[in-house]
Amino acid sequence: MNALMGVLASSMNADMARLGGVAHNMANATTPGYKKVFALPPEVTRGGTVDRRSGVLSRTGDEFHLAIDGDGFFVAGGDGEPMVTRGGAMKLDSRGRLLFAQSGRPVRGEGGDIFLAPGAFTVTAAGEVTQGGVPVARLRLVSTKGRTALDAMGEGLYRMSGVDSAEPAGGHVRQGYLEMSNVNSAREMVELMEATRHFESVQRAVTGLDAVWEKSLKTLGEF
Figure 1 (cartoon, rainbow, N blue to C red):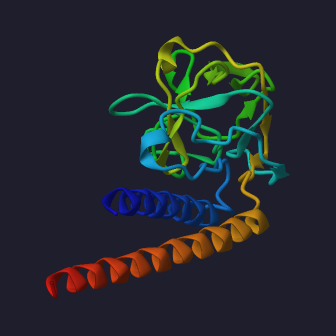
Figure 2: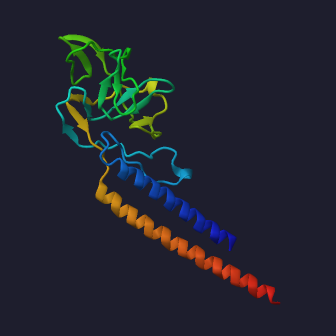
Figure 3: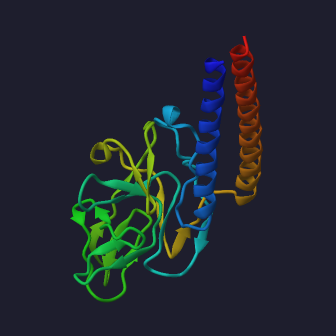
């Protein structure tokens, strides 16, 4: 009986993890650069939890919007370990340092943080940042190919082991574009309903098993 209850409890935990992942995906369905998180229970989430397929590139015309066409992630610096992201909405702080708009972390260039003077700037397909025709920095783009661990950390950021030693990416930068989320809302809704129904069926099984257990104990107590 206890073994069966353990199996049912594990099944309910898996359903809860699945529901949590689906809810997170649906909440970020319109977040630029967001990658679908596979809803897996904690004991099997080590690696392979993020769907790395690219989302659709949407033209915005904003010079502070950058997207990667193909392989690669931007690198976000700041305090603690560097993170990677596909969310290319950016802004400047009061010192002219280029930041990711969503997280506020500095955009990492090949030579460190990127600082811009007031005025327009251009980013080439190779990630070279120029102002007035003069190169001022080059974006650092890293590949995640061959890396199994890519964990969602919120604010469009992902933790990847060995960012500093990662290979350069082969993708191209497109200024004036944003990559949309790769979440398919319709599919997530179907998965939400399936997970909910399965959770409820297991919950009913637990309730029924508990009733049988209680009745058995009562019967034994009568002897």
